[in-house]
Image 1 (tube, rainbow over the protein chains, first blue to last red):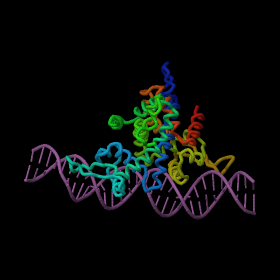
Image 2: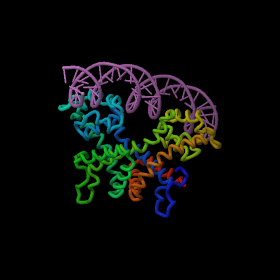
Image 3: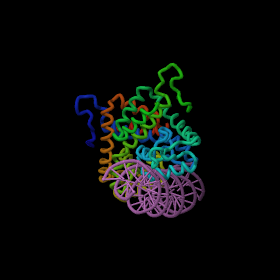
Image 4: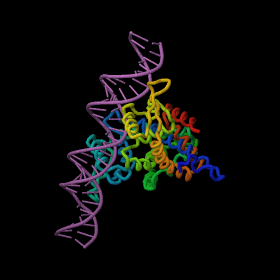
Length: 170
Length: 170
DNA sequence: AGTTTATGTCAGCCTTGTTGACATTCCAAG
DNA sequence: CTTGGAATGTCAACAAGGCTGACATAAACT
C-alpha cells in the first residue's frame, strides 16, 4: 500500500481500475460530488434558521414516520445531545411532533407535521432534481454501478441500516 | 416534481430508475457512503490536533505541489479566513512549507514537507484501502458508472476543477 | 501615482459535533 | 414490591470549522 503503483497491474488481469491514481480520482470525485449533493438544500436552509443537521432529521423522520429517538440516533450517527438540540427546535417550530410510545412510554415517536412535510418536500425536491438530472445523464447502467460502489463503501453496520430502509420503501 | 411518482413510468421508456423512490435510495446511499468515506482518515486525525479540514488541505497540496493559496481556496470552496486558520497550524507544525512566488511575489506557493508527506501517506492509505476494497468488490463496470454519476452530480464549476486535476495526474 | 490583486490577520458569530453529569420515567428481573 | 437498568431529556462547557467584516501589507498593473 502506498507504493505509488497500487494493487493494479501486478497480475496479468485487467485491474488497472485499482491503481492509486484511479483511487485518488474516485476520492476526489466523492469530495466534489458531495458538495453538489448538499448544495441545493443548503441554499434553502440558510434562509431559515436551519442547517444540514435539521435536513437530515427531517429526511429520516419522513422516511420512517413514528421512528424513535434512539433509532434516529443510530441512523444519523450523532450523540443524543446533538440530535436533541436539533429536534427541540423542530418541535418548538411545529415541524415535528413527538408522541409518547403506547407500549413503551419511555420512547418518543417522531412524526412530521403538515408544515414539516411541506419543508421536507421543498428540500427533497431540490435534492432529487439534481440527482434525477445526474441519473438521467448517466443512464441506468451507470446508476446501478454508482449504487453498487456506494454500498461497498459503507461500514457494514450502515449497510444494514441502508438496506433495511431501502426494503421498507414501497 | 414531488408528485410521488417522479419522472419515471410516464412514457413507455424504461425510466424506472428515475422514480422518486430510486432517487431517494440514491440520496441515502450518498449519505451513508460519505460517512464510510471519511471514517478512516477521521479516526487517524482525532488522535492528533487535526480535523477533516486539515486532511483536505494536505490532500490537495500533495496533489498539486506549488499551488497558490488562491487556487486552493477555489478547490476547497471555503473562505480564506477558514483556510488560513488550517494552513497556519500546518505551517507552524512543519507539515506545509509556504514559499514566496518568483514571478509574482504576492503569491505563496504551498508544498508538503517530508513530515507532511508522511501524514498524507497515512491518510491516503487509509482512505484508498476502503476505496480499493469497494472498487474491487464492485468491479470495473460499476466503478465506471460510479464515476459517471458523481461527475454529473457536481456543479459545472467543480466539474471543471475535477477534470483539470484528473488530467494533471500522471 | 493610484488602483487592483493576493495574502494574512484580528475579532466575533453560528452550526454542529463532542463529553460529562444528572433527573425522570418506567420496564423487567429478582 | 423493590431495585437495576434502559430510554429519554436537559444543562453546561467546549472544539472544529464554517461564516462576515474590517483592516494591513506588498506587489503588480495601468
